[in-house]
Image (cartoon, rainbow, N blue to C red; front, side):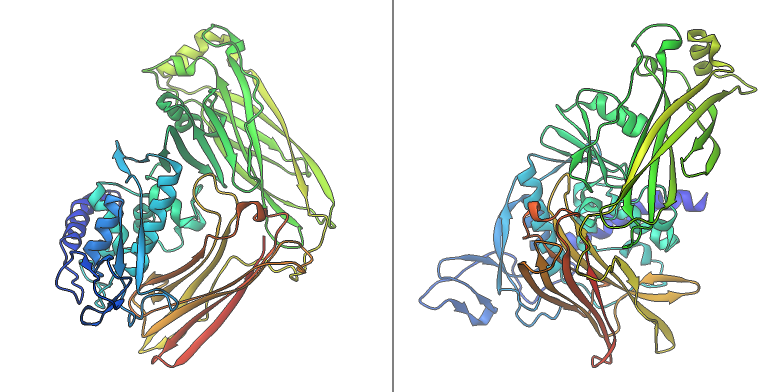
Length: 546
């Protein structure tokens, strides 16, 4: 009970803390947060450490200025202290915040006026996160630690909006169990999505709702259709409505399930149809010997959306899945709502080779001892349900690209840097290099992230760094697998002494060059922690490919 009630107990405390941030608890070196006009022939005001063109209005850097510009979308120029060690090495002295219509909190869903406003908001939020002035003090092992989880800039934004973000939910879960994401059924890995999605994984842009389901599948609900959104909440990817589409961010395609639906609003066994959807996930290794495949299945009852006030959740069924590779699996699951199973295929394939696997699922009602109102309804509709077995047949295609890549078969998305003892404690960097190829919303990009962690008992937890750590993102982007045609060269660097996490992103490669099957990214990221501000630990470097 303690762990369930804890997040709710801390909401008011977090909100109060973030509002204190907004009021300017962390002061900058400038006394005023009003913009300063640059005048005269020279382009520099040395007394305020502000540089720019004559006639410009420039805000001095402070946390409340950054938050104000993100919340208002009014745009503006902010002066960045060139001696700031937490700022990118190649940053300008003046940064521009974009102009956009700011989001609103619409009944717990962050709502944006248009896709352009959404993308400009992300630019502003990233600037706020990059230039936020963090205090040196750490609240580790204090009663206030739980109020300082995650990025303080984003905590302040959530509090100002009265918004419960997916990011905040993940931070709390990680606080209690560091490796919780390895075992959860659905995990949203993209940090942009974590910022804007609510804890039901939903956001609204224009007249469309977007709901993250699992494994890079996004439900896109058009025409402000709240009823269709509720269908997706209830039936996941098996929800049926003309305003619902399902976008696969791995393939850049809408992949709507092929479902035969019984007649709606009738009474009879034709109202029940066994449905399913098979999703081929990314191969687990570069030699294409293993794949994880996700199966979603349920018994579709066409009259269910018309019936309210009945309990269908307690109705269960016995399922058997024949995966088509000589293995089968039995489980007990929901009779009318979605069940999710993941299976790993081991199948060595040569370049350009493919193989299909046929999948068969059977389902039969398990008659409960105590009948519910919902059970009575469906048995009145179709008395033959007791003993009736339903079947769904699907298939999945495992394949490899026809051309071998030039990058030596290295696919490594994340890793833990070597542990290092300092001052009686163990530290490490958690490093991640991620490619987001074809998002349903927002940017295509490459992101390098490093998190400074300290070992506490048997767990690792985010902590303020000892001296500094840095990321350098560099390398070449090629337009073909032969790695002979250089499309773009990257070179970015960032270092911190006060943030628990560092992140570098590049949004400037056009989406058409970002197919997982057409463009390998020969990108190297160096992750370095220097203790005593001199001695490097690790200098870990990794290469990313699609």
